[in-house]
Length: 227
Figure 1 (cartoon, rainbow, N blue to C red):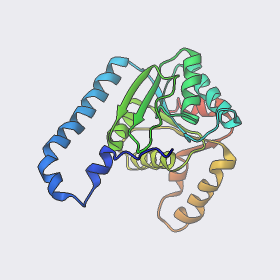
Figure 2 (cartoon, rainbow, N blue to C red):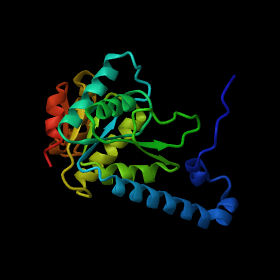
Figure 3 (cartoon, rainbow, N blue to C red):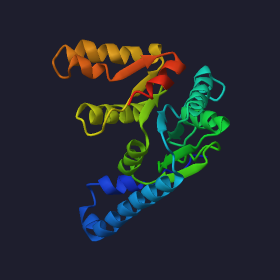
Figure 4 (cartoon, one colour):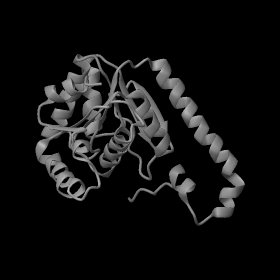
């Protein structure tokens, strides 16, 4: 039986086909967005996370894979170093990082997002928030994280990665260490940045240096302290 696709709040917000309906309900949508910000700020301020690291990665990472094990180890090592761990709260790599954090006894946060098909929050999250709007969720990630580790992931991980890079490059945020875990996975991207973007003058060579690409989890965790 095929699951019925839900229409999300983001889809309603960005829908250009029903402009009249939007005009009638605009103020209510603004209040809903405001409420998400208020709930997010109130919950995460009360949680007193201290130094927290955002960990991103694919929801499709199998539980029995080496990537999943690496995610658990990363979350555990971050916890041992005194960091709380913040993920998107979903399965796969996110679950792995939350699991490692929970096993290390530190705060394990899941910032879920409404999607057309349910993912649900993984069972290793002890502080949970669910968002309707991606942009509200992004603000929470960046406000309450002091660094960013990316396990192998897809478009969502790339979205968070380049959002963070843009804010660091444009000095919208202070020093914000970013580590990409997996040389084989991420190395081609970094090579392309140098070969195409730097070579064509679209970014500066030092902009690529904002990224640490490593297979060494201890190096990645140590890098999170470079603030």
